Length: 302
Image (cartoon, rainbow, N blue to C red; front, side, top):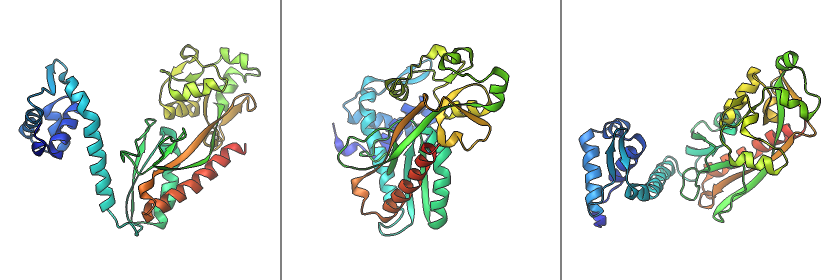
């Protein structure tokens, strides 16, 4: 392979075709022409000794095994390039520039925006990039600067602080219970509309390890989106499990079986160790830790 012929443009085009499945869609995504994308892919294939990266199918361009093998490295380059741009967005000693934060769907959508608004009011030159996803970001690869995680980080290069336990509980809307009756025993739940998962996740496995038996066939509404489950509980569709602190902010929601159906979910705030000398990262990290600790306490005080 001729390493001199490789460039970030080639890898960026590779990722775009991989994600979109066509040259034209990749070109639109990157704001270049289709011939440019095709040329980049051809040049990359040539640099790899003539290895084919995509094959044509009725659904578009399908990646070969060679392309699949390259994608993790291209993603690492993409994350490093984005991290470099964020690093250049403001001096290390200034409260200005970009901070990329990743968190679970519920925390990212329901909790963090208000916290970031408060931080932004104090430091208006900060720019936040918020990734709300249940996928675990790779901080070592610099997919994000700061992460809120529901599992203890294992990488030694990360700064990790446990900020508490998110309390999960069972809730239903008041008018749903008026229509269907309030279950007095756990066994009564079999007569109710239950809200839960479509595919088993690590979170579900964690709840099962804590003694809660959950099976897909139990649920009237099945969705793998925690935010959709929360929305369905708020809409009065049935009974479901959600974060206590969020549910208690809605006076229409009633908690069921608070003793039997209480599940702590440990929560960690993490950051790459190399960022400890960056003032904006350090201050945002500390603000998040303080605000999220208060949020955890709100749910556990009920």
